[in-house]
Image (spheres, rainbow, N blue to C red):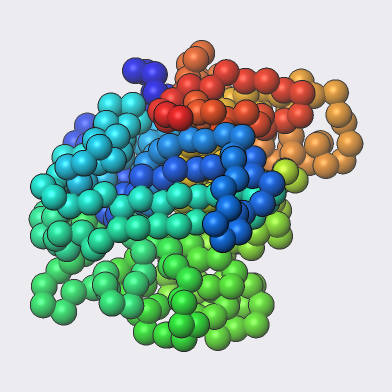
Length: 382
């Protein structure tokens, strides 16, 4: 990333504010992404990929997404003392400028690894890893004072402690807004008790399937209404149908359609969407703008391969908006885009020339708009 990072929160920063905008905890994987495969290999077969990239994955997708959007981001994670750990640590700390002061290296612990194989618009993944040597509370201790934290609702790792405050509760006591999502339940039991953890949260951002399953509702909108009774900011994403949200702190409700893009890899798109919602909320943007910005950010991500590799920076966002304004296409859809994203006109002029873009790798060979070329910068290796 360039030494100068565009700060979209410059206008709201005040003396005495937290040094950290977003604090996250989780497991970092070394992601190895193979692209351009005609098919996945059958037993005993070897196939060759046209492209390959390597990048930090797992929770690093979220940390990188937030940092590229200009948020001062701190990550707590365990790192092995192997070459994989070296790669992930150096990439995050030195190239993506993510603060790792709450992270630790552990002797003899094997860094988790995922190999992702992209075929057409599908993918297959193989992962290997071991549980972190220490739990979150021990690793983090007292979290840094931050504007927001991002966490996941997990049945066996609640955000609300029974024997003392969790790191999430400590962060909230210091004034942080808690943004939460939830993963797929492999048992498909969808225990309603998971939603009890929303008592400590400011926002909840599930997808439509998860939202309906946990709320026992039959439509995404009914799920949204149910979640709005439990958390101040409820957001439900619904793939190609877009997203919808209710912010009870402002009384706003919004529905935003998804952008029409050629999606080739959804890895990390939810992390990009969540980071964009956090940014817009901290900045005080109207709900419609927050959803629209998140939709654009995730749409830019899914057109590229590979988690944190694909997370857009402000250079990518600026390129997209300038292209939209200059594009000769003037049909109803593109006029709607220009109306919906007119708020970017107040932001893009302040983006420095040469501002960070998504990472360079052998797989970074697709551009956002057909016929529109960009220069790619950032951290990744192939």
